[in-house]
Structure formats: C-alpha cells, structure tokens
Length: 110
Length: 115
Image (cartoon, rainbow over all chains, first blue to last red; front, side, top):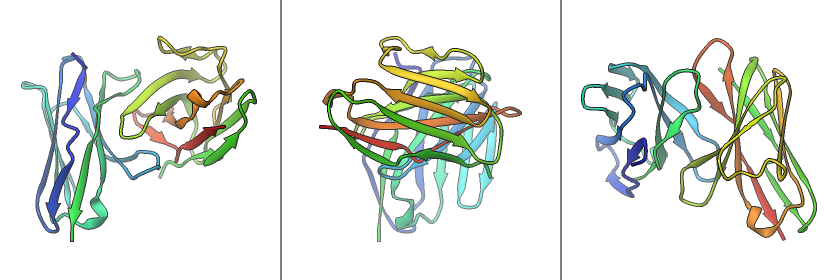
C-alpha cells in the first residue's frame, strides 16, 4: 500500500463550483501535511501547509486534516478556470522527504 | 516568498553526452535539497536527497554514477546526468527546504530530451 493515496481523477467542474480534493495516508507518524498545485510542465507550487489535525483557510482555499481517520482534504470555493491544474497532497514526519500522492487533475470549465 | 531557480528549463542533447542542471535557492539558505523525476501524467519520484557539504542519499534503483549530485553551498545544488540516453528523457525538478522550517519549495523544472 502506498503511503499516500490520492484519486488521480480527472475531475471536471463548472466555474464557480466548490471543489473537494481528498487523500488518505497510512503512516500515523505523519505530522505535516501540504497541498501543492502543479501546472503543466511547471514545478509544484505550495498552496497550503498544515501541522497536525485541524483546518486552515487561505482565501478560496481550505485545508483540513483529520489524523484520527488519516484523511486530508482541500476545498476550493468559487472555482475559476485558472484553478485548472494538478493538485498534489503530501505529508511527512518532519525532517524527511515529502511523500506525495499521485495528484488529481482538475479542470474548471468556463 | 521563497524562490527556487532551476536552469535550464529545457535542454536537448545527443545520446552519450552529459547534462548539468542547476538549482539555486535565491532568497533563503537550504540545508537540504531534493531531486525528483516526473514522467507525463505521473507523480513526483524522489531520486535523491542532498545535504550541504555531504554526499547525496540516493533512492533505491537510482544509479548514483549516472545521476551525479553536488551540493557545494547552502544555495546551490547541481544534478549531472552522465552519458545520457533516450530513456533518461524526462522532467527533472529540484526542491529546497529552508533551514528553519519543514517546507519544500520547488523549482520550475527542467525538461530533458535525449536524441
């Protein structure tokens, strides 16, 4: 079993929709959780960073971590065509390399 | 913000030649840098982790003699693909972690095409 599981999609939504992206993980030692956005042929860009369980909001983006169920979520409100990209969840224990999910390809249709 | 610069963004080379890719942290010091490889529509595959002044730690299955990594300073790491072959064609991405936090910042990536 891969340490971080993520549905690769693709996911297609109309402009303005609320998008929910999810990951599960198996390593209970993971304490740090991140979401990256990657446009085609570009490097990943950090969107959200969360330590342990809880919610974090930044503009239209909300990250949630539920350590009891080992579940990570990213919500995008009022989605825009410019949000079309691949979203990668990642986790680690601290001073270790990030473990990435496969990424979910999102298309927001105008 | 934390900026990681990666050069070149695209390189085409002949089979058998060597290619060097540079990764620089522009506005922060990075004790640790990471090199990833990414195939189309797939996730990032960690190749190696390098700490400034130390030898790189390679992931299982990655040939250290083929993918030479040097991390000579807190702001620069290089990946050299030696004797490149067409199967080495891929998207290579570097990442740097700041000294004082557990966040990896990524470069824009290098697209390598070996003819």
